Image (tube, rainbow, N blue to C red):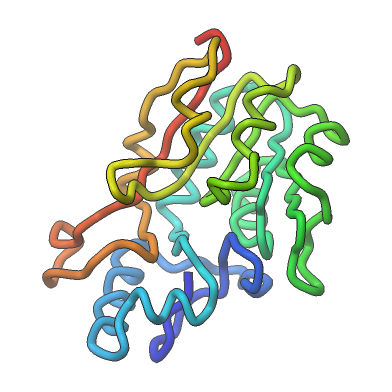
Amino acid sequence: MGCRGVRCAKIGTVPGATVPEQVLPGFESCCERMAAAEAGDGWLSACEATGRFLAPCRELVDALAEHLRSLAAGPVLEVCAGGGGLAAALRRSGVAVEATDADPPPGAPVQRATALEALRRYRRKVVLGSFVPVDAGVDEAVLGFPSVRHYVVLGSRLGGELGSAALWNSAGWSAWPLKQVARWMLTRHDVWIGPSHGQILRHGEAWHFARGG
C-alpha cells in the first residue's frame, strides 16, 4: 500500500506495485504515515495512486510467517501476488513462497500464471491469497483444487462481505479468523480517526480455510 506525500516502504500485493525494499516499517510507523497521508489528499487516495491494498509491517509479516510455518505443510503458493512484495518479505522471515500473478508488473520477481495455471504447476498444499479479485474465479479454483489443504486469505470486509461467495459456500471446508494476523493489517479501506492505532476504523481481516478441518 502506498503513501503519497510520506515515505513508505515499497511493498505491495497488486499489479503496479514496486519491487520491495529490504526493510519493512513497524506498525506504529505505518500508523504515523497513515495519519500524515490523511493530512494531505487522504489515505485511500494515496493507496489508489500506487495501486496498493495492503501496507505490510514487520509485525504483520512476522505473525503471518509464524502461522504459515505452523502448518508444516511445505512451501506456500501465493496467487495474485502482484509485485511480489509480500512473498519477498515472507521469504526473509524463513517461509518458502512461490509468487504468481496473471499479469505481474514488468521486472517483478513473480511467475506469470493464472491461479489455475499456478495450482497445476506447483500443486501446493498451502495457498496464500491477499486481496484477490472476487470476480476472477480465484477462490473457486483454489478451493476446488485437490492438492490444496490450507487457504490463507487476507482481505477487507466491505458492505458486510469478505471475498467471494465461494469462500463461504464450498463443501468440505471450514474457516476461522486469524486475529493474531489481522491485528497488524492496514488496508486502503481503513480510516484514520485519532492519534493512536486504537483509533483506526479497521476493515482488514485474515482467515484460514482448511479442507475437512
